[in-house]
Length: 422
Ligand code: AMP
Image (cartoon, rainbow, N blue to C red):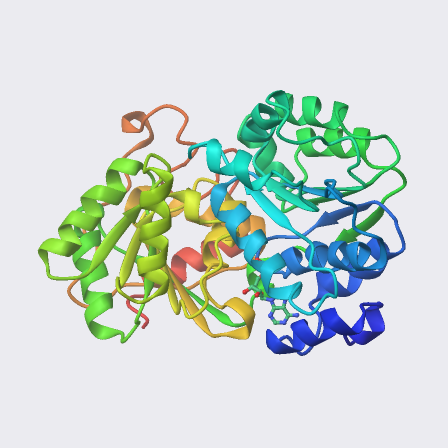
């Protein structure tokens, strides 16, 4: 499949070629013709699949085919859950619209920063608005923009939009939109809430499923290293010393941990920076820019950074703390190996997390050999059940709560017991 065969016109094809895309990804091949044909779309696609261009390109095509109004009216509304995703989407718009004869204007609307510059930008209208829901409603309330002419609505990462408690805002926004419109819903997971919202908003949608499972990410080598909890920072330093990774994204569980691990790395002379949701928008943008520009080698982040973030030239991701859910695991490791590059995703497995990691593996039916590195062999054993905090859902034998050990579990345990494999 080629981009010209998808129905995009010459100015967009030229921008696509300049961006270095030679072939559409699976989600682009499936979604673009449907959007151009005017259908609603229900797409199960995770980040890294090329979904941003899958909706940005046909929206630009639709705008190229119609007269732009003066003042400009919002034709396309793209709702995103996070600032990072908003920025990534507006960057994609900027990179593809360059050759269009009438360049559409896109405005990004975000909470957490001053509202006045956004009001100024909206003077004269906008053709495309990329927004997080709360601030969008504030601006509508101030009459800074009208959504009465929106013809295309995109819900990007709908599962996260709803996770972030945006369900109410979403309902209020949809009530402001004209009924005859095209709606595109992208989500990595179809939770009950996403399914319900999709059922309410979409009209006879094209259903597209191109979710990547770990096994479908062949450019990412996955490793699981057993290590004791207190020795993880030393192991991380060891990996940084023994691999020439110019940039590494390290995931931890809490804001506090981002700062703690960053401080330890800095004390060891490693240029590291923390990224978490409690930083101001300015600090987050600066941290990302420094990381992208290679001024900083290690970024220690919470799951805030696990989805949507697009950092090319990121050869390694480390799960210092394991993610809570199997879905987050895919999102995190998908930060590396972008756009066909090779990447490695390393997970640290302390004794108490063995069962949790086994659950992640089981969900994806993708199993890794446990490694033990010389000098970092674990001595901790999983705590007995009675000593574990309630609701950890893990059993110390390495199985999954509520499930009897499968043959695969037993084989994996035997493999892990048989000693170091590097
Ligand atoms: P996304 O899933 O939208 O976050 O995109 C993931 C990454 O793939 C980004 O770095 C895009 O620039 C890149 N990408 C998207 N489409 C293509 C394509 N057709 N060819 C090569 N890279 C692409």
